[in-house]
Length: 171
Image 1 (cartoon, rainbow, N blue to C red):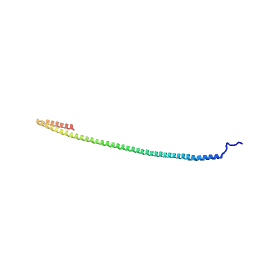
Image 2 (image 1 turned 45 degrees about the vertical axis):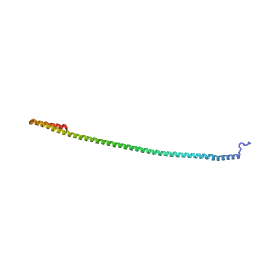
Image 3 (image 1 turned 60 degrees about the horizontal axis):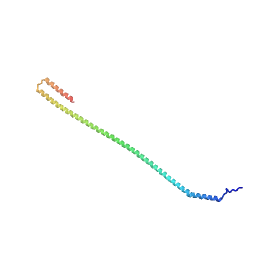
Image 4 (image 1 turned 90 degrees about the vertical axis):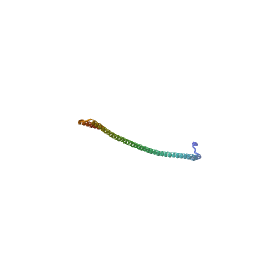
């Protein structure tokens, strides 16, 4: 038979290989695995911090957005109130100005009516004076000549007619 030297089992070599493997495993575990694991844990902690900071920043941003939305709504309401107040004030002022203008116009009309009444009285006084002067002149003419009854009546009727016409024209 043939010898199996090629496939020989050397127990010492197997034990040394297993010991090498175990030593290599512990060395890798101590010097490589633990630091890598620690580095990964640190990275994970940093990422967690960043996520927490991002979440806090997002919450603050949402709070700030809500705060400014409320401020904006409040400003809109305040602006609306100011506009309404200004509109009401303008209406009140225009009504006051119109009322003052109406009062002034009424005063001017009353003054004009009073002046018209005074002018009418002056004109009436003037007409009365004119009638007196005409009557005086007529009386002088009548006295200066002798008048018969028919002439006397026609002159009186004419004077009365003239006075009546003057009164109708002035009124």
